[in-house]
Length: 195
Image (tube, rainbow, N blue to C red):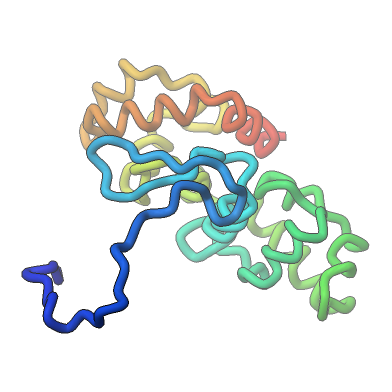
């Protein structure tokens, strides 16, 4: 893994200014936060930041998520910017007419995406859990959660003590999953997916 070994100050030009990290999110303007123990600074506006909504939707529909064909980043951007959906849970409520509102979409394109969305309703539970984008939950942890939860309803009812007892899930991951599942917005999103 590459790492910085030294700074070549002699290569700097005389007009260089020290870099300062941004204080506000460039997408929504929310004050950025730095979580202790992490390198990154983050936008805490997880449910109102347009860029985060796009990234969440792209992950949910992407190869590591539900792998929804015909729903690339360009289509995701349009779905959000045209107000056809607010987040990934609205994907399954899109009508044929909604899809025809997308730039470049004709009858065949709309039908292809509709078929892909129908197929996405039949994925394995572990794949769906992974697609939710729960911090520190990849494919392996999603499989552990699916085995224990057995359904999305079961996932909502998982307790921190249960998570901590699972082999393959450490205390930090259990804490992250618990925080995610206790968040009222996330709970609502999961309930919408159940419906």
